[in-house]
Image (cartoon, rainbow, N blue to C red; front, side):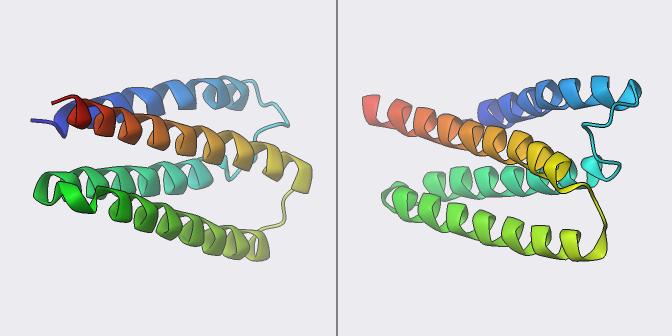
Length: 127
């Protein structure tokens, strides 16, 4: 099944992504927000949902892969933007630490999403 391998890779990536912040969290470092794990869970969970929906869509209708990929990415960007605005209005955080934490989570999740989905598309084109 084509969906199982990317999902397992996603969970392994998420564990690796969480390792560095976990280290700083247990060291009581000031470069990790107290609410970091809420932000991490939301962005990683949303990335998982988008990747899973794109992979399922690819199996159902391979011709709609590009449109689904773009729609999923736009949905993810808008959902994270809305979450970030609400998060910043409800909590008082150090803005430079927030930007550092957000960039770490968001860009690495997005890079992984693009990598795994383009890799999956490349494998489909080789067949």
